[in-house]
Image (tube, rainbow, N blue to C red):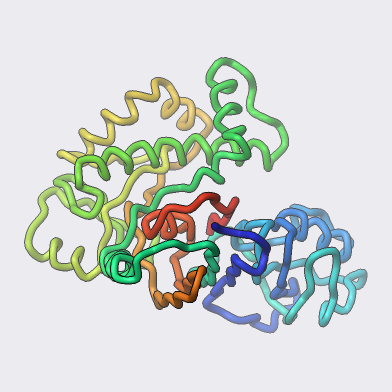
Length: 329
């Protein structure tokens, strides 16, 4: 069982840099509990006397969790003393001057501590499964939480395809488009899990360099690429649909076949001006540790930006509940 309370799901952003001493913004490290990221951002904006859109953060974090994440707020005379500042369900742990607004995805990863209760697992089988996940990685699915409560974001996508205009407000619009792209990615990944190619490279593959946003096209797959794939230096990728290049060869044909099943959705995303991007098909947890105790299991691991802890948990064991994790960076 997952998430009996917030303390059972702890996540901390790893930013990869410190406040640079600039005067335009203040970089805040904030601990929040039972509050979602957007709500805390609005509270910080009100406290600073600025617009909500002027508050920066690197990624969304779940409401039902203890999450430590970073925000920036514009510096100004109306701002409070941020050291020790607190609000409903959050408190500022540190603050420092910074020159730029924090952008989405501007972090090196997230560290997790997850406590599973009422675990019934054979220790030997669990140990083997833990070793497999740590060594092989897991499919890098977007979790169902990306699609909204009761898949409400996908309902909105269906209405948009049926002729309803996109929401005018920035956040609902972004959630709808993101859900559409995530649906297409998950469909491609599911196809490659089914045929066993999610952890292999296919001719024509757009190949991701692990830990980076860059990729290159591999027209043919040779022993060097396979060796780099085996040591997790490279990953195959799937589409975040939009305007831009597409893979060729076997990988491109498979991707085109999957996207064709969704009719006009890819074209509509291109019409909205979205630029295509790539997402790795697998994630490999780092610093993976497991501590079994009678009736419970505590897991600690780190993931790259955009990866979901629930993707790791689903590959380890069956549970009777899933957390509503919303990490997207």
